Length: 221
Image 1 (cartoon, one colour):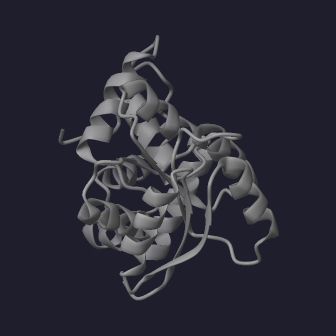
Image 2 (spheres, helix red, strand yellow):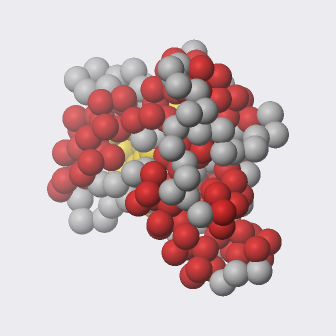
């Protein structure tokens, strides 16, 4: 990837945060534009900074304003910024909650540097990245919590839109989907925008959750 990905780091553990910053700054296509120690400081810096991050890597448990509440605020005020949760919590309820409030990726703090870099690159390229473990958690937690499993109205989606949604769930890029379906990338983007509108999803990650909820996605888990 040649374009620079602007990143903000949010974690109250200074040593851990500096370690992540050191790791990411070694990558040619990453730029750390600022750091924050809690959600309130992050919101303040976002409001005052002229340059906005493409991606925020955020801890969940922080003083003053935690990562979950900060994510909710950012999703409303800065919907284009993508949030990666990086936390020591790996319970199913925590993962599902963060995905539902708007995180586009979920990493545990004992993840490898290689996985962290891969996740940031995937989010920059596709808009989200869910590991097989996270996909399984979404499927088990979100789908099983529904009262009317499989009975939601999905007839308003065209066969082509369903096809594209399934490919999005396989974490294909716009270009890969276009090549697979013999369409132009612009046509794929049009269908994707229609899917966002029709499903009332805020982002691509929301489309994946919608597809899993409605059993549209064919997941290889």
